[in-house]
Length: 276
Image (cartoon, rainbow, N blue to C red; front, side):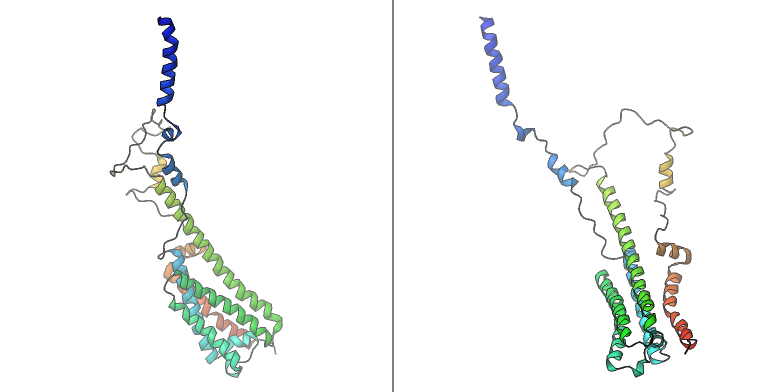
């Protein structure tokens, strides 16, 4: 009798196990969806202000404004810039030519009106584009058309350098923000009560390196963190940061402004010594 009931009991136990077995939805772990959401990396956003990029735009705006002051003084006195472009002095220009010169100065003065990053960037683009257009417009009335490509190349080259510096600074800020976000995502997780979850225990302690005591901290740790626990200051990477580190921020800005203003005595010298 027991031998006859044993197969029946085996079939019944298998059927019961199949009936009470969890389905696919119950087998799915609860942490899959949060982990999948964590894999979606949000886009990196720069801070709205207070970055190296904002300081660079402010510096460029001041340089353009200072250049416009020099243009206005030149138009009222020596007219070295019109002579270098091969056009008549400002007082002898047509009303259209005088209007173009006045607009050039006003666009430069407007650089000081920028209040945020977007407005400063738009004003800098407007000044650079107008300077290139004005250089092209002088080609129709210049008495020295042979040097027009040189003047146009100088105008375009200046804006290309400004754009290159802007792109490099922006990319450096994006990389730094991405590294900070990645470091924040790799921090130990905390529970809903605010307690930090303990890391998984290690089976074996790391072996000390040759010549290093067991109680001494790792060499990489000491190199990355100073005596007071603060990270060491990073070395300058961009050309602007290297020049600021060598000469100081204030002196570097003064040199940039002076180089834009000192071009006018050089143009005046070229105008006086120009063969007739």
